[in-house]
Amino acid sequence: MEGSVVEAESLLARCKSVADVNVVEAELIGKRSRLAEVNRELRGLPPDVRRERGRRLHEVRGRIESLLVARREELRAASRQTRLESDRIDLSEVMSFPLDRGGRPGGRMGPPAPARGHPGVVQRTRDELEDVFVGMGFIVVEGPEVETDWYNFEALNMPPAHPARGMWDTFYLRLGDPETVLLRTHTSPVQIRLMQAQRPPIYAVVPGRCYRRDTPDARHVPIFHQIEGLVIDRGISFSDLAGTIDAFTTAYFGEGIHARLRPAFFPFTEPSAEFEITCTICAGVGCRTCSQTGWIELGGCGMVDPAVLGAVGIDDEEWSGFAFGFGIDRCAQMRHGIPDMRVLLENDARFLRQL
Ligand code: FA5
Image (cartoon, rainbow, N blue to C red; front, top):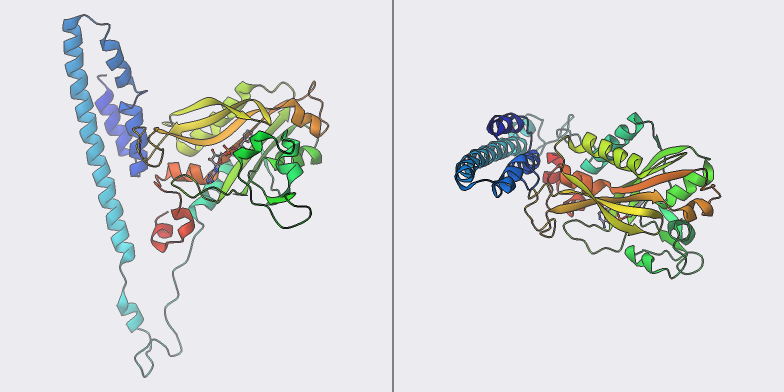
């Protein structure tokens, strides 16, 4: 407890954004922090020791809270200043160009060139995640966005009318027999294409666009991006999956990330899990973005079901593997502290310039 304030000062000095401060806040005074643990331990102490430790705890927590408030304000002021500067229009530049007889910019040189654009935040997130996986020895593969029912559902252990299909609200195309051609709802069908194209061992990631008839809200948009991972080799276990997820989320979010795996269900993996992190918008306290839960789901994962290996003729006695599918937009949303994902599709130049 004694070193907590010094540690807080040094962690906060390294924060570059309010979202970074939120992550540090969870680390320092969140439910899983050392201080929260000390608080829980108080109950078992004799009354006089408890009183003294409690007073000290309260004091340390208070000082950390003040540091958090101050750092947030400092970063907000800096970002306001940067925005003000980038919003400023220098009309003298236009005036220095030759004007036509009506006073409009014209003449031989014409108006000033427009500002240069840059890749959007989702594209950059995708590039960063790809780099992390390439560094771990994975290959990057792409698959079609227009898929057949067989790849999107059936080969993934969901025969027609399987109730789990309801997890993905689908856009169908008017092509072929009704409801056989669709916009892929996830990147998982590329698992099947990969296993058909290549014999194990396989270590691959598949980034790409997905489509769902989801009502847009703070965490959902109808067109979004996932990065799928597939590993098939001899002797692969759940701990390889957990280690891989830990490696890439730490590489993308940094050491301070608070994460958990929760049991879940996907027809194509067994056992299955969902990967969640503490909401960076509210530091786990609960807000509109995380529906007051304090947690945000980034993706699903699990051990590849033997029925899926069977569908592509891979011997499940010899080979085993894991798969995962993470939302790229969701990762970007949490890393950059974007309270509402819909801004990613609105093309508001003020937002695009910021990130
Ligand atoms: C799937 O799509 C599974 N294919 C993931 C998977 C792959 C499981 C391999 C097991 C093995 P889910 O529907 O939960 O799972 O979506 C995964 C992630 O995609 C979500 O956690 C979220 O980050 C992102 N996502 C899903 N729907 C949307 C949406 N409408 N808008 C933005 N992101 C979304």
